[in-house]
Image 1 (cartoon, rainbow, N blue to C red):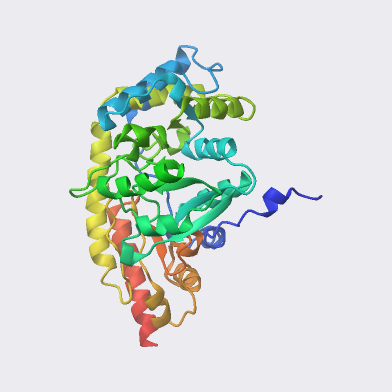
Image 2 (tube, rainbow, N blue to C red):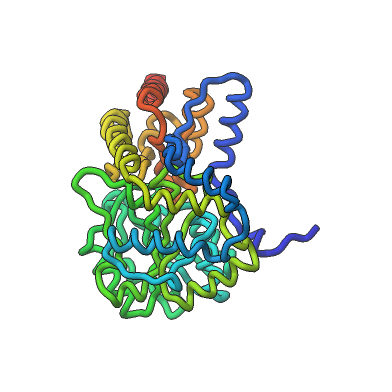
Length: 395
């Protein structure tokens, strides 16, 4: 069978080999500690589960409008008013099957063959693949530890061409956990306005911010930037609802209309019980959200302090999300491995700790470690990693 060229163009996930080996070891009874999780380890708050249950008992299990329930759209609108002081109307909101699905709809709606999307590295693994599936060309703007993994105005200008259609901003970031300040976003925004570049602002980790840092949406900085931006968000990370599959976008009503039309011919509506669960998530108490955030912050501070003690590890301390993204190029050399990917494979096969190689995020010198697991497992994992490195160095 001859497959479509667009499928052939997809880059295999860099996590597949590690995941396959981890599962193979687990099947043999090996005690593997997985630090690759991209989801909270907390269960969905009970009041949200109860709301979904009551909705189903009440017969709310039928189709809804393709773009989401009006009641859920209103809950999202109210959330924007409270959190970012942003005003939207229902025609400017689409609810989809998770933020990933909404991003897919967006790129399909805005890109023609050859259009370019600027993606700062490191990036979330699906950004470039979704751009390619829509016929677009991902243009990578490299950042590193020296720039605190942030895109500079100068670097943005260097990557804009006549084919540039959009810029992706992910704050807080997966995989680095960095956040942009209002001043930094304003500088990037001015350039996008000047060149008529659409800003895709992925804010899915908005509620997971630590220290004295605050989440800022580029859309709240001016009316012009709001009109030039599409905000992507959802309840997956904020309310531990990854499996419920509810994400949404807020932006230009004509764009939202076309995204909704595409959804109507592909997935129809998001799962109805999940939509009622999301309504409860935004209408109910936010205490569980803050409790989870505090626990993640505690883990971050503890895990970071231990991790940077490992020989060769260099890490920019995250300000949000639940990942650490250390540069371990020097560690790989010290332990006799030619690449970080090889180091990560050995770490799994010998120390039984699964991490995600940074090559999948466009940063081959780094690894991503999730601290969305218990404190005891994190302490055991960092002990295993440190012992593995020190033993390899001795040899």
